[in-house]
Amino acid sequence: MTGTLAQLIALVAYGNQCISHFGTHREFVQHHSTFRFCEKVFFTAEKKKYFFSEGKRTTVAENPLEWFRYLGLDGCQALRLYYEPSDGSSGTADHKLAGMIGGGGIWVIEAMYPAYSDFWYGGWTVSREEAEDNRVWSVEYRCIGYEIDSRNLQFNVGAQRDVLSKALNEIETFARELDMENFAQVFQRANAALASAHPDQDYYHSDLLPENAYGMAEQQLLFAASRAWVFGGMGSWNDMGFEDKQVQHCYETVSSALYTAINTAIIAVVNS
Image 1 (cartoon, helix red, strand yellow):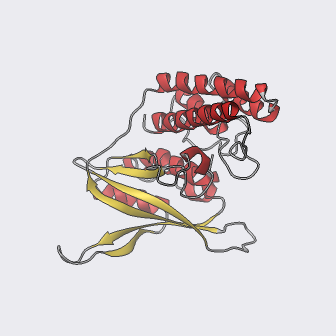
Image 2: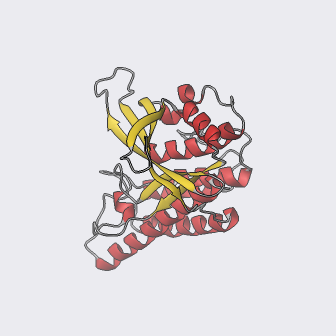
Image 3: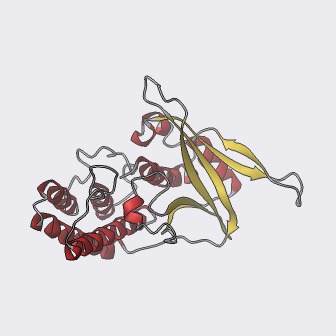
């Protein structure tokens, strides 16, 4: 899983608890794995002095905890993950671009109010390239959509569990047929997480979800989806091509199916 998506998941999952209970997760930013390489994470929105004046973008929160408080005081009731596939204009499938910042479709955070939603998009830039503590990233979450009809994407966790398992079985079979044992084992381990009592064990972002906030079925599905993520750059599952057109077609089919299953599984869990 990309660091950008992992951070979005954490912001929504922990943010919902912080919005409803001010003062919880006080050490969230200092200790959470998704902020380990970030110098700062801040939030900006446009403020208008007069109704017809041009909006001026200002910082509304210097860190995630301030943002949760800002949202709560503003009347936000809940956070949700929202995903929209690309329009296909690049000519490249989303799963092929998923390892690049900004590629693979659009992920945003939906802040839900009683009558509408605002949408926040994260932009990552290198601000301290030679930082000894490896905190090289500056992340700005910008409110890019104001007072829009709520989306609140919802998918059944049990149904998505079956979809993900089927996609993993098919892509594992394909990998074994082509003697790609390393990838086959990745898919096998991801599938096993769907039945594991400790699905987060030995996973880098084991703290993606707050303790006691999600049931075991939700945890299993999220960490299975996270472990199944093979969509990176050079040397990843994406970095392959086959001369045999039938094999290439099968490769693209099972890859696209897994990518869709992963994304939907993540939304099913986080928005549950």
